[in-house]
Image (cartoon, rainbow, N blue to C red; front, side):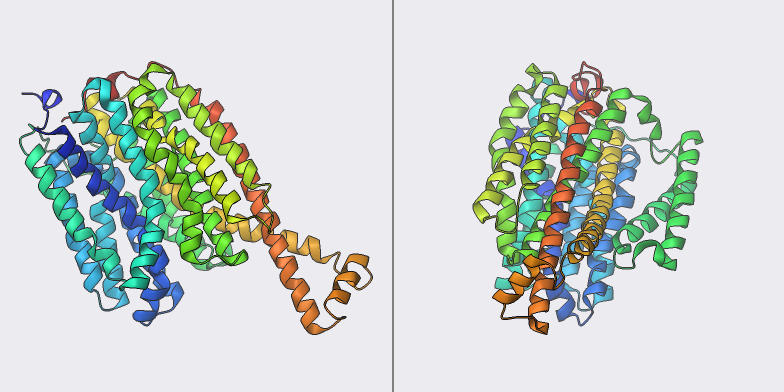
Length: 509
């Protein structure tokens, strides 16, 4: 029996097991964020030191992702997936019992490292076990997990932290991971796999660890250290750029590269990945900024900010199966282009918000954007994998996921930087008009009982709120044009999109 012909005893159970493990890992990328203040307080460190809980995971996860293809060829896809799930459960438990910040940071780093192969391997295994006609359904299911899990994360993290204690945000991974391991092992253990004993590309591995690791730290700490005003950021950027340039040159010339950059010779992989990375980065930035703006400027609690953002997951939850079932009847560029059109339109809707906007209006725009998200991941992923030979699926999935995660890191840093910079600009512009001789200012002062220090402080708070509102409008306008531009990029891919990679095989090696 060849890998391509293998079918588990129960497709439903195998799919649930693989999806559960993926959901657990994607959820974990956001669930800890909302608990950071509590974790920092309980472990007796500053909030700035506490952010290393997030940074350590992100750094090691980014390093591990592009290694997925090499690890899959070396150990086998099912073994790699199961090992990653088991190790993720163990490291999650260790995070929960950590009693100091250094311990927690080390365990989170290990957790990020072992989590790397989970999503690419889930994608590869689902493509392998589903018949050709139903592989769109597999990709749509993963797309649903990718959208819903990060939204549930902050809400669940806030509720668990408030109702129980922060270690439980890690302990909940244990029963989920054990169940997923047992289900996948019983269903997939008999899948035939061939491994290759390729030599380890030590130079490529060293350059990857140095380049990506330092870059992730620079992106996570850049805003806190005022970017290039900091010597640490300057040195880190130089090290990262030199290492990554050397990595690209080395990997393109080495006989057994640890990252297969030659995949970018495939047109659909190049433009599909570009659309995926930019689209996900925009999606990530929007869902980072919206709750932040609601909490800092409109007075929402973390839970209510999460609930205001959560409706984005409603339509993907119901539409993803339909997209997976019927997408093959359409030009996938049309679906992806429609996705970018809807998401871009939702950004322009948010650009019309003001400080009086109510919860219902925010939630309705989120629901509308969910239509675009439902059409985004599955078509884009199908396009980028469509022209890859079966043996390169794991490499392509790992590389695309790595770039998507890295794009999210760039989006996180750039979103915060743009938002604060534009606020400073608008604040300066607005304060030019706030003088005792300005009729509007004079009238407002009269309403506050005349010119006084408290009155001017009140005016400054109003100016700051309006400056952040204008900055938020600027950001969403920029995102609207970005998504409209992605329509042009996705049409640079060429059909057919059901060919080698997505249709012939799931990538058995």
